[in-house]
Length: 129
Image 1: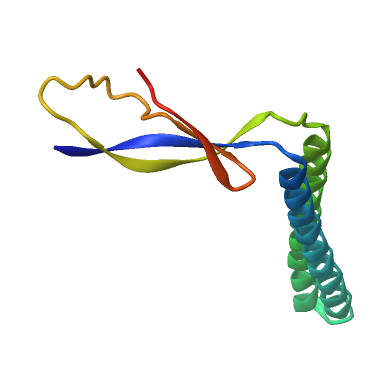
Image 2: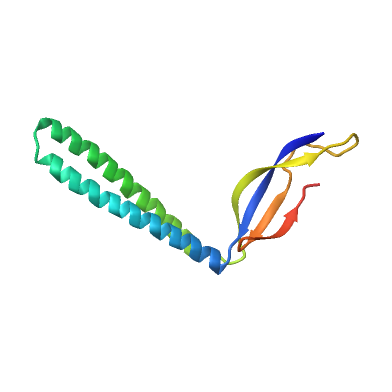
């Protein structure tokens, strides 16, 4: 019988991983800054209008505030990434794998193990039990 089990995927922190993630964070930050600038422009345009336009300007401000919050989170993530020591294992995600069970197999229903990845290459597969 085959069953699905959860397997954790962890990344080993290397200079290459830190640089790749930092570049991705910077790109996301630039995109959010562009969106904020566009929303500010639209808000100013809406403020010149009448009463209904004031409501639109308020909605633009809410979206601007959301972008600012996302930028703050990204800046925090960038600072944390910068402080992360090389060799640290970061949990990337969990995936499903197929396990074969037979009569007499040990089964405790726990996690199916861990896959350790370094610079895109699997360097270790840890099995539970």
